[in-house]
Structures are given as structure tokens and as C-alpha cells.
Length: 218
Image (tube, rainbow, N blue to C red; front, side):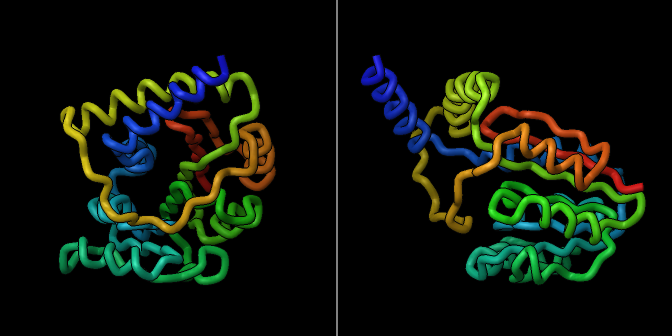
């Protein structure tokens, strides 16, 4: 039975490699729905190739986008139209963030690379009164519910890959992100530590091995 399961997972992995899509970008439109129609300053932490930062710029007066990988920041600048209200910079998220305060802070698939509680406290300090923090993170699957949600995500992941690639095999583009690291905190620990730092934060498990956190400063 274990051999059959392993072979099935390997087959799904090969299919996903042939029909790749961006799990993080899947949540960008959801992130925008958590935000005001217009806001002043925004900060995107772990900005990658800048897709979310450019979306934020459509609503913000100015966006600062920070990533630790110099090559991906250079690529983000190339992809951004001249005159866009986005400033990309290479910086360590824990030590090099531009000075706040910000009306909006977003952080997608990055916080699990950082000291979790310390990172949330830092982002809280950079948030303006009344501002909104939105995190899309990764948690380690530990509970039966986690594993069930992961199992449901596998066929949906394949289906979305097929649909978004219109059924064609898509060559995987060169890596546009820094080397990834698996999450080392379960969702329950994430909730416990997040609410200790951000009272009233709303957290939910999500499909495609993600969770979301939304917090609004007083």
C-alpha cells in the first residue's frame, strides 16, 4: 500500500512539474480584498519578482518592496514599468526594512524563513495606526485536519495547473525565488504565537499548503 501511495505521489509530482503554477500568486487577489480601495504607503516583505507589489501600486501612493535576493530584485525592477509607484530594494527583512509607518504591510511565503514572533513584532512596529497587515504563510502539517486539507489540495493543484496551462506542458521558468525552506511550525503554534503578538488577528488554514493572517492596528 505504501508503495502504491508513493508511486501515486511521484506521478502527481511529475504532472505538477509539467504544469506549474504559482501558489502564492493564487492569493494575491484575496489579499487585495482585505485592503482599502486606496491607501498611502505600503510595504511588501519578501517581494520576489514584484507581482504583488505592482498590484499594490495600483491602490497605493507609494510601495516599498523588499527582498534579500539581489538577483530577483533586479528582475523585479526589469519587469516594472517606468514611473510605477514601487521602490524595490535588497534588504534583510529583520534588519533592513525601510522606516515606517505603513498603512499596509504584506508578507507572502516569507515569514517561515524568519524568527516568527520577532518578525511579527517588527512588522507591527512598522504598521501605522489603523493599518492592515496581511500574511500568507506556510505551516507544517501536523494534525489530521492539516493532512486532510493537504490531501484535498493535491488533485485541485493538478487541476488548476492543467487549466492555467490550457492543458499544455509548460517548461518551468528559471527560478525567480530564493531557495525555499520547509515550515517548522504547525498551524496551532502559529495561531498561538501570532495572537500573543497581534491580539485579535484572524488566521485561517487555506488550500495549497498555506494559511492566512489578517490584523488591523488600533
